[in-house]
Structure formats: structure tokens, C-alpha cells
Image (tube, rainbow, N blue to C red; front, side, top):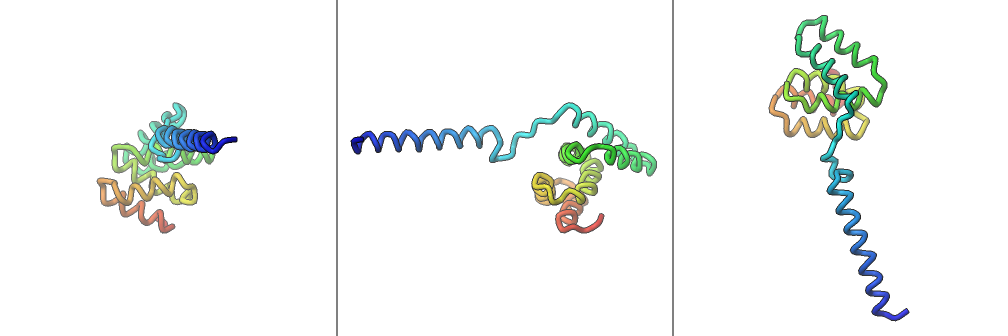
Length: 136
């Protein structure tokens, strides 16, 4: 094989690898920016959110009980959705429950993001405590 063919072949392989990684990053696999919400997860999150927003102790207990009935993966997904909610009370509820899942990389990332970017100081403080493993 001639030298010029080897260089062209190597360049082609390098360009294909760069293009492949660009597609990988663009669609969120490396960036983590895209999170498609499963309809069942959205349903669970909305049910629990409705209970949390009532604000009374009985509703809060029911929201915890409802979350506990979900399988592990569904719990994690539901809490991640709730952590992005516009209501601070819902985000605070999610953070308080995320402490049990803080070893899950996506949960740790969500908690770290909340400590830095959340608009509510109570949520920021709770997310920092959850990252540190403190009981809320």
C-alpha cells in the first residue's frame, strides 16, 4: 500500500470518529442534556406532586407512601422529573427522597445541579445536605 493511500485512509478514519462523537454528543449521550420523560413516569410524578402541593401532613404521608410503591428505577426517574419541577415544594420533596439514591450517578448530578442553580435557597441547602449524606 502506498504512503498516500495510508494517509488518506487514516484521515478518513479520524474524520469518521470525530463525526461519530459529534452525533453522540449532540443527541445528549455525553452531554446528558436530553431527558425523555416516559408517560408512566410523568403520571407518577403528577400524582405525587398533587399530594405534595396539598401541603397537609396526611397528603405528605400519602405522597411518600405512593413513591414507595414504585419499583427502584421508576422511583429514581420520578424523583428526577420532580427535581425539575417549577414548584419549590415539589423540588424540596424530591431532594429529601433522593438521599436514598445519592449513589446513582444521575441523582448525584441532579443534586449537584440543584445546589448550584436552584432559585430557592432551601432547595439549594437541602440538595447540598443530601449530597453530603445528611438526613433532612
